[in-house]
Image (cartoon, rainbow, N blue to C red):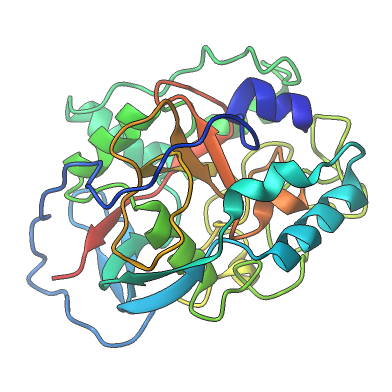
Amino acid sequence: VVSLVAASLACRAGAKEPRSTETAVPTRSPTRNPTATLRPSAAGATWTRPADGIKMVYVPAGELEMGSTDDEVDEALDLCSQHFEGCEREQFEDEKPAHRVALDAFWIDRTEVTNAQYGLCTAAGACQESRQDFWQDSWRDPGSADDSDLYAPDHPVVGVDWYSATIYCEWAGARLPTEAEWEYAARGPERRAFPWGGSFDGTRLNFCDLNCAVDWRVLAYNDGHRYTAPVGSYPDGASWCGTLDMAGNASEWVADWYGDYASEQLLNPTGPSSGEYRVVRGGSYLLLPDFARTANRGRLEPDGVRSFVGFRCARTAE
């Protein structure tokens, strides 16, 4: 996992940058669906986005203590050490300090964007096709029977960089979620360690279990998927507001540049105004339980393309 992080997500180390509240991603309001109720009051109300048919869920305004405390970093290290030798506390230090954020209401995709949905954007001439030249992932077995699952219509689209994800969301009348929005949708005001609750449960997500193509797989679980699974395959892994697959399947791009957390409370934070890496959130079919924690942070060059990184979109509530 450590070498994977260094070569791919670079999830755990490196220079940090100060946070700011400047917006990092341009946004535009999507076309209104005249049959949608865009001012619901309860978390989990749904609205179908016209451009691609994706169901979005409503996340009401609220506050979150984002990130991890010292004790929670210790717990993350313990979880990592249960499944992998060589874990270090420094891997989780970028989750500190725990800090308050206040967020306006927003909508977020219930599931990750699929290959079929992304294909609508490429057919419209707005998006480039997802790439399949990321096989520097030497652990993979291109051409195997289960390799085709990565491209199945109902599986999350992978092989897209941050720019392509941004373009898709804008084409669909949305935007990438901010890091704070993503964590709030996954974690909720109760600060769940995992979308479903406080303890890891390998039956609630697609992660690196018995079927995984690498040596660090966890043999105690078998979800039947070597790579990605159809989106929404784990309803028992739903978050407090009804989002799915936020702990596994594909890791996800968010809008923010990667950098240090601020210690003061912020309203609708959007991260540093510039940087070298963009934030990636959520575990994946290739990663271990500590990556599936709702506070875990990853990073990747914005033009980076990986077979386990996809995305979902968000939009500000009207």
